[in-house]
Length: 320
Image (cartoon, rainbow, N blue to C red):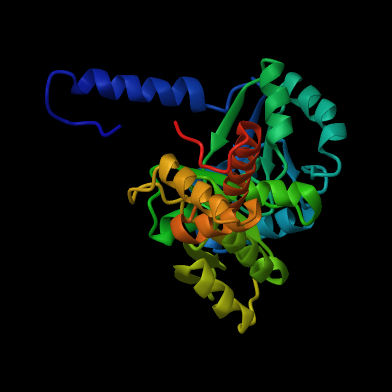
């Protein structure tokens, strides 16, 4: 909210704003609290003054990696004694939660940080925050850098509606299901990927959902920051012949539903393909190439239409 210095309500607005700061963000009292603190994703200058205050004055800091956090604290001349730094990562978060909650309940001020960015977004912290809120404890946030949001705003895509997928499963049916969901997702999506799996993921996204716009965002806020924009087909070609290093975010445009393609058009095309003797898989592939629809959704529709034809005892297309 932007406050104006003019008008009869200015004084009331200003007092209200000050009250919010005093009542909700004052962690200097005796009441214990848990603070979610955003830390730099590459550039140390992005650590905010509030984050520096919290990390320098709170009783303990829960860290994804105590070594990384110790280095961050030392860079700003903040206390980094072993007693203040508590390991809290994906493998021990569940077991560590009761101890952390007891500290907050006893009046201690506890900060939680990840190696980079905001805890809880593809990083530890989500479960701890949920448990603290369930116990009626005070939880606050010190906003900071986010790799997902940085990639989204750099992508140049429509981001009024988006979803953050984070890291995909590495293999198996779980990975297939997530990729199929992405293929039919109408919102812009952002996911994280390693250099070793980048080309495979881009290829699978193209195969399942057709060619779409994509941005490959690498090393955000670092010296070698890079943003590549193009289509999935172009991305596969580019990165198949290019060595990639560093941390990568992939921003995928939503399934294209804005160019006159209706569900009925897809249905009609698949029905025509089945009439012409194509298999459900072949008919689905035609729909993917023609309309850019998700392969999984197109295949399921083709199966339903084939079964419908069989049940009707006719080879003609189902009418509605």
